[in-house]
Length: 303
Ligand code: HSE
Image 1 (cartoon, rainbow, N blue to C red):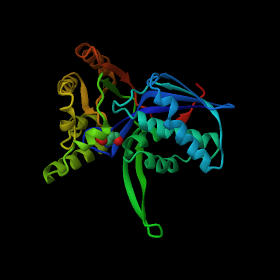
Image 2: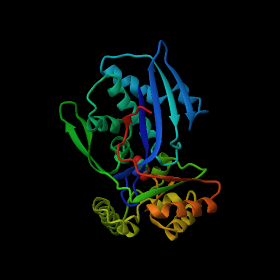
Image 3: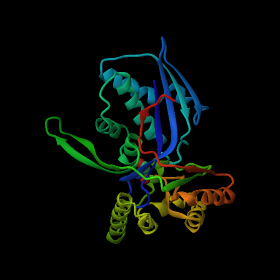
């Protein structure tokens, strides 16, 4: 069995913890039954010893199979193309693909909304796990419910997914330095003023409407943020120049991908080669990727 899972970009500027989309950059995991569990990694993370001794994919895959009363030993071959700790959803890709693989392995119904409600137990914010599961553009919100018998609060994810048409592309810039999501969340202000909150609410709503109506020109304004990007970009000030250069060279929007350090530029398809060239020349030490959007999310592949 082979599973393929896309990279994702969260926030899209103002949609903090709520908006995300999937990109045509993939990790694959080949799983074959074996007499003893073994792990092989190609690409990102291949030299990380911890990924072999304490592998989160294998842990989640085994936990879910155990919940189906199944215990298996397998050979796992990971081919990783999604950069790690760069805001491109590498952790979500691991969580989502492990859950999907366990359901497929156990021949259970592949109900992705059920899987989403499992994934949210492993990652607290739904803006990467949702597009990793469904592909496309996603709005996700948490619904909390209180189980009075056990006095515990459970959370479900409500989401709306829309496919992204082929007339727009992504140019993603991956810096050679990482920004930790955990640390950068801690660095955010504890309180915000009403004006900034209203700014983000209106821009995030406009951005969602722009994606649903394919009104790409609106992205130029709608992708602005006042809650998190500035604080985070100060950790890597070169990103301010990168954003400005992108917007001056065809990007409709240029936003910090999740908590960074990568940047997601959305542009018309015909502008992507030029934008890619300009960015690669200006930032020779960074990786610049010309990508499409993925509209399918995690799936089994015959590749
Ligand atoms: N939305 C998260 C953040 C990252 O900005 O911290 C992705 O879940």
